[in-house]
Structure formats: structure tokens, C-alpha cells
Amino acid sequence: MAEPTREKPGPRTAKPRSPLARTVLKVTAVAIVAVALLWSALFVDLLRKRSDAAAGSPSAPTGQVAGPDRGQPAPASEPLTTRTS
Amino acid sequence: LTVPGAEHDHSFDVFGTRVRVLLVSGSSSAARLDALRVQALLQTVHRTLTRFAADSELSRLNARTGEEVAVSPMLLRAVQAALWAAQLSDGLVDPTVLRDLERAGYATSRARRMPAALADAIAAAPARRPAAPRSTQEWATIEVDTQRRTIRVPAGVRLDLGGSAKGLAVDLAAGLLSNNASFAIDAGGDIRIGAASPCERLVHISHPLEEEVVHSFAVFQGAVATSGLRTRVWRNGGGFAHHLIDPARGTPAWTGVIQATALAPTTLEAETLAKTALLRGLHAGRQVLAPHGGALILDDGELICVGGLDAVRPRPVHAG
Image 1 (cartoon, rainbow over the protein chains, first blue to last red):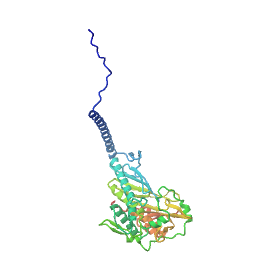
Image 2: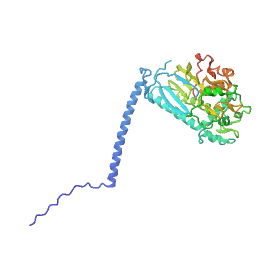
Image 3: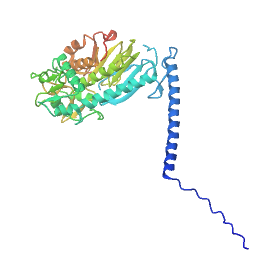
Image 4: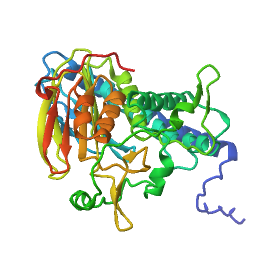
């Protein structure tokens, strides 16, 4: 009696995902990225508020706080020049 | 001369010039926000009032002379400011000289154009004489209805709001900053200084020929403005022209004064007084500047301080 032949296992292939599953995956990925960005923004904001609180305190040294637009300290009461414009 | 706290320093370009906002606030975030609000306001004013853009509200008003035109609160206020300046100067600072300005060669912006050499223009200038107002006083016939918010400019007349618009804009911006510990707005030499807790600030006058500081003084609160020929002078045919028109003659004014600096409670008033003093010439110009203080520079380079400039403190005013 012939032995029943065993079927050789073929190469495993991933089942194609349904459109619904693909959409769920995409939405999940986007949500994870958004939450990560939100937490980063909140963390940076918290750091900035602490920095501002320190700069606004009465003991903050005069003329030492960086001017955000130039990234350099702006000296207190800087003279101005009037000229023909 | 110290301010108790560090200054936030914010610069940007508008009105064809560099504007700088310096302010001390409780927090750097609040200072930055206020500076950006000033920038947004000045850019809005510029977009509304420039004559160099065909789609600005001023250009649209100029295209409908003789008609009653509904206008925005900003344009209404700017025209009122220009008429106030004309009245203060007895018609010398005249918003209706646009046709003469264009005829002299100032039809498009000169913001990024190299001016002619002022010394050459002075050497070639005609006989010096004080400017005079137009006998027709067309500015006085402009109808402004504040209730209905309309303006009617006489047929054939077009407006250039120029310096008065810039002065008004700086004063409006000062209104946004009045709660800060201290602030200064420098719009290309038109300066407004104020504070919730006033302090002194050093102001330098730059010489138009030597381009170096020729005088310095302290200002407690108020405005400083300078009017002159240095940056808006150009070759025109065989001679030279500039942007300060003698209304009576319809040509650039050569009065012997090449730069006038005026102090006043507001930038609009300082701007008006400076231009009036330059147009009137040395003798009458001194009288114009005397009440608040100022300085004249003559075409031989001489500096004349008026009204005890060293000790001047323009009286405090509420911004806005």
C-alpha cells in the first residue's frame, strides 16, 4: 500500500490585508505620530514657561536675556538713531 | 540711562524702511508676541496706505476722485491725520502734492534705489527760499464723513499720505505696547518712546552729509522724527530732485535746510513739525521746533539745536 504522500509546506505568504485593515493601520500610525508631536510640543512649552518665569523674576540680571529674534542678548536701553528715512 | 530688565529686540522691513521694536516686558514670550503684533499692525497700515500698489485702498480711493467713497476705519483715520498735519503746518505738509511728486520723478517706490549724492544735489540746487502753501488749499476741500465713514477727494486731486501715515502707524503701534515696562519703536528714524514706568533713552542724530552721529540727547517719553533729503534725492534731467515738495511752486523745496529733527508728544506731530521746519527754512523753522525742541542741519553742514534740546522732555501722553 502506497504511503500517502505528504504535501511539502510551500513558502509562507502574508495574507493580503483587507482595505479596512489597511485603513485602521494607517490611522493608528498617524495617531501615534500626532501624540508624539503633541507631547514634544507640550514639553518644549513647559521648558519655555520655566525659562520665562526665571527671566521675569526680579533677580534676573539686566541685559542678559537673549533677544529671541537675533539669538543674542540685547543690552538694556539701547540708544536709537534718528535720521532721514 | 538704564532700563530695569532686558530688552526684546525685533526688526522687520515695512514703509520702505527698517523698523525696530525694543521692549521690556514681564516675560520674553509676551514681549515677542507684542513685537509681532506691532509688525502685523504696521504691515496692515502699509498695505492699506501705500500709493505704490495699485490694489491698496489708498490707490483705489485715488482712482475715484470726485466721488464719495466708503473707506475702512484705517484709511479714514489716516486721511484725518494727514489733514490734521496740513492744518498744523498751515498747508505746508500737503497730502495733495502727489501730482507734483510724480512730475519730479517720484512715481514709484525708491526704497531699494541708491540715492544721488546729497552734496552734488546741494551744489547744483537753485537759490534757497522758504516753501509756501498753495493758495488753492485743495486739502481743505477734502470731505471726511466720520459717521458714514466716507471720503470725497476733489476731482483731479490724488493723495499721498507718506510721512503722516508712518507717524500715525507708529503712534497706533505705541498704543499696543503701552502696558510694557518700557518700549521704543524706531521706524527708519521716526521714534516713539514710552513706558508704564518711564525711563530715559539716549537718541542720536545722524548727520546727512557725514553720516555720523552729530548730536545726542536723552528722551524720557514721547516722539522724535527726522525729515530730510538724504535718502530720497535723485537726478532729474539736468539737475536733482527730492521728495519734499514746495506746495506753492509744485517743485522740490530748496530752503537751505537739508534735515530737520523734531521732538513732540506723538510721532505724527514730530513728523509734521520736522517736515514743516525743513520747508520753512532756517529762521521760521527754528520757531516751528522751539516749543518741543529739535535740530536743523543746514546745507553747509552746520547743526543748529533749538529749544534746549539737551534738556528736552516731551510731555507724557497716553498712546493711541
